[in-house]
Amino acid sequence: MDLDGGANSSRERTPPSRSGTRFRTFEHHVSLHSGAGKGSDANNSDRLWDPTPIEISQLEEALGRELSSRLRSVRTSTDARIQLRDYFRQYAGIHRKRQRLIFVNGFHRAHVVEVTEWLALPHTESQLTAFPADVRGREFWRKVPVQVTDGGAFFFEALYDPQIRRIVSLQFNGVG
Image (cartoon, rainbow, N blue to C red; front, side, top):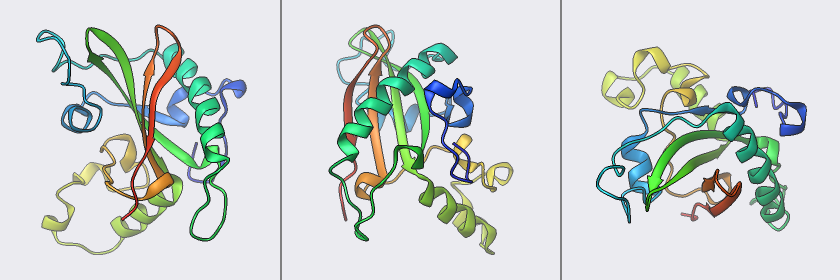
């Protein structure tokens, strides 16, 4: 999905990079939030792997079904429905209990717009430590892990098992 709000469903066969981005520099965030270290064997707990475009496409199909189902009952503070196409996603291949999973970090496009607008304002370098100089534009989310600890259904994390082609965990963030 791009900032203009255009949807990229898996049926459109759009390359996965338009709706999300794969990460290799996601280790700290992934291990904290996905439980990648829990139950991991010593050889795999600190290694990420690169999901293939086919795995991401299959993930997107499964995620679309799961998110659509869960979003039917979710309303925002303005009573508006959140749409599947409103989410951006970051992916990282992880190992847990000798199993290869894909960690998905999902966030609403409003967050991308808000951060992009914030980045355009004048700031001191100390305020921008999470955003290296080369990622301070509207595509920041492709290089910097998005980390939000609340925000409700505007943010989610999921785990996808490419072996069985299913979402095995999906949690929206808490509120407040």
